[in-house]
Image (tube, rainbow, N blue to C red; front, top):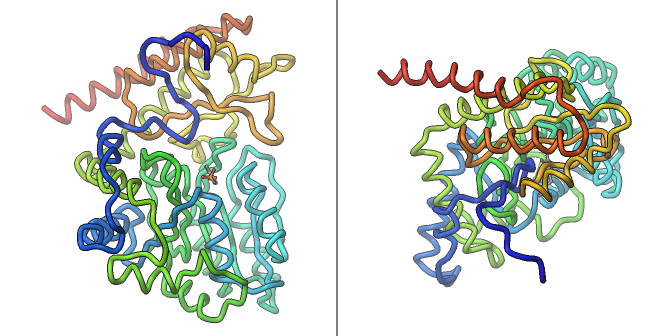
Length: 399
Ligand SMILES: *Cc1c(COP(=O)(O)O)cnc(C)c1O
């Protein structure tokens, strides 16, 4: 490229991939080793074990050299058979893409419509499963944190809804943009397959996909008849038990994963979640002060990893984003699917702190002004107040 160099750090405030911390970049920057040798074995066993603490499971977590989309496919082809019915919910763009994948794979999808501003409704799940007396639905697939809207669904409540019907369907959950930034509990919430990826809360570059699997999912796997080869859990689990993979793993990303797990353990998952909650609350304070509307309708479903923001009618959200990128070197997430041009998304997940967020919000505020969208008030002031209040509590707690 012939563009002039831009000084300082680029702010990657899209809701994934996220900013990769220097510690992780340095961990990846090492010679690739023999993935069938003893040093690799130690690395693999350590990361496979460490991942269980992040997913909060005692069961296995499978690691693919793939994006999150690959891990979606793995979850479906390992547990289902051609023609099986699956229940999915239209929370937004990612849920819609997963539904389309299920259709292409030959599954029969029942898609509960949604308004792209609301979470999964557990009562609706209960009603649909209750009517399925023939037990034709084999899986309920939901997105924990819908990244296109910034809406979080209550996975435990969906589990309770399924249990009330006594329906045997598997519960399959996409936690790609919530894992390691928002509370997630695979075992406690009774999830059968959890789908994850490396490039969001885990602070890694793109390239790893995850499936955490329950006993029940493994039992379904044994009789599932969808064609599968690359994604086959059996081959993975058998090799993983010995510290190896059935094909070449993303060795250097696994170095990075070991470092990411160490960083999460040093900070402590609870503190990681509290930091995300704090930064999300400050972001929402800013959005309200600007006089803009948050995409998520209800406070109980606000995401702590990103905030979707509507622009006023007649304003092109992509133009606002382009101005913010051009003038301030801050990349924001685009409105996706039905929200294209109507909303932008501020990613506040992964490795960032108060100052970083304030920089981002200052750029958004200045960019709104530069794009001719006069904010109603100073979002930056509102965010500062939100953070200095939270800061006082933190200082008091530390004292
Ligand atoms: C990012 C994301 C995906 C897609 O993952 P890729 O790595 O782009 O394949 C799927 N679901 C959710 C909720 C996401 O945030």
